[in-house]
Length: 394
Image (cartoon, rainbow, N blue to C red; front, side, top):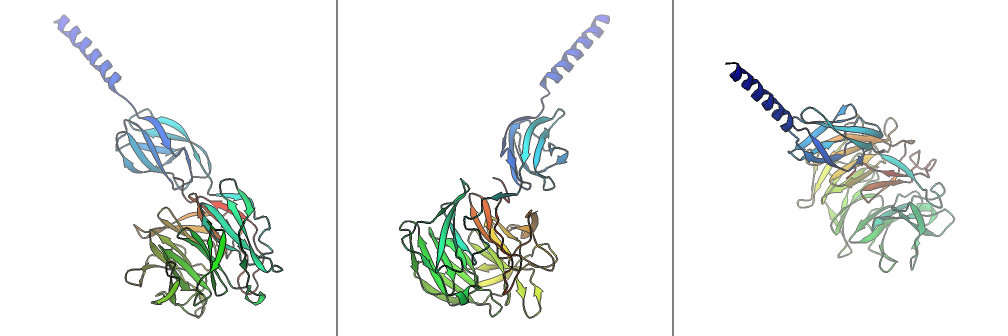
């Protein structure tokens, strides 16, 4: 009887040892990216992940968006500030630990060689991930274009075969805009449309726009210009292929000035601005259907009031609106997700509020240039800063 008892004890001990040997914990093989801004998606590969796996950045638990035995995707918590964090993956008992860096949203870059404070309404476009920006001092008779290299953080003067002529001084307060389409750059201002060809390094004047102050939305080889000047809400389509203008149905959101817009995957969105008659800010967003030539109202940003003379742009399937003016100061950027028709706050520019800022998207980043601290016939103090904005790290 004693032999049987001792045998059971030995077998139990062996079984326990075997269980301990077979018990395995989570292991991290790689993290991509290894540094990112808050709100970014991070992929963790390894082994022994489960549906109950917990991922923390420091002491802050992250949201898991997908889990398999060898891969997890998580969202970097939006509450985190920049700095180094211990990334911990706990799947069973002993956590797997690695290092992770939370990056800042904004980084100040080299300013334009001429500065912006003495120039009139610079505007430009992006070609081959470089920003082409035209500036003009009051004393010059043509727009002087410079190119900003986003990789080297440096400026160089554009070497072109001809200059883009300037309008006369009575038109200085008109607000020009620029865009990129079909591998070329375009500048719209003072009742003129100019095309820059990077291959021939030359400017060509095209058919004149029917209206001056507009917001431009590029969909393929068509550009939709929405009147943005308190005097109407007409919409004109410009065909790059045919160099022709066609009037479309009016913008359904009404007459306004200082609107912001963007295009996501071939769909245009426009909203915000000021209603002059009611002296009130629009807090809205409208989606344009190119197929039916109609506008559909979508959800609005979560702030209590709208903004005027802000910036709008899109990046990797998301839309963004920020800066501008409202009842109070605006330094905030908002992100729009079309799949869920929802908004979230991204971050605030670590600088003074501003209007008329230009936003250029290149290399999965946004370059914010120019701006002013006032609105109206008195432009106010112009801003010479250039900021690199990383809304999300990929």
